[in-house]
Image (tube, rainbow, N blue to C red; front, side, top):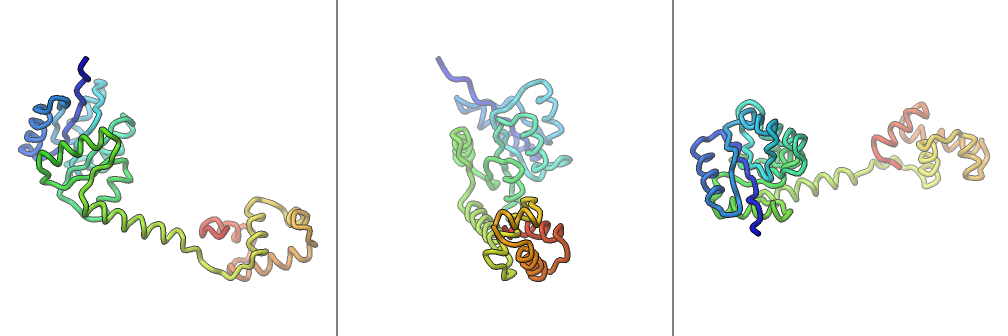
Length: 217
């Protein structure tokens, strides 16, 4: 028994390119293209009719609803649908935004028939197709992001002060902190004043807020 042909929609405002993609997909035995639209608004009624695609080839620079916003809407309407962005844009912001919106892959136009079909196969297999240049940029972006998150400000807090700050974040009162650490209330109060001085705050709520915001504990 033959497997059903995977449904691939094309949403691309360039009529010639849209038609060539649709013809390529229809000529492939295990794929079909029931929807080829020039905008996301044009494709939207098909969702209302219950025609959920397996994959959408989506241009970023669509008229009306942008391709990136369309990705978000597709993911909301059909979470199982995978979206591959087809675009001339290769700047970091577009790449990052498209993938954060839920895109499963990213290809630059013009991509030849072999590259397009390879991307569709990759997506069907759970991979994330993108060219080497885009993959390199993404790796650099995520490396920078990880580094920025790891860069916790150093306020010179001692291990004991960090321990007390964590307990304050956890909502313990001064007396409870003293009991938990088996220290006197006076000692805890001294540590708390030192914490305030080092964090440049004047209240417990400000200290807790700063600790959470800057991931100090």
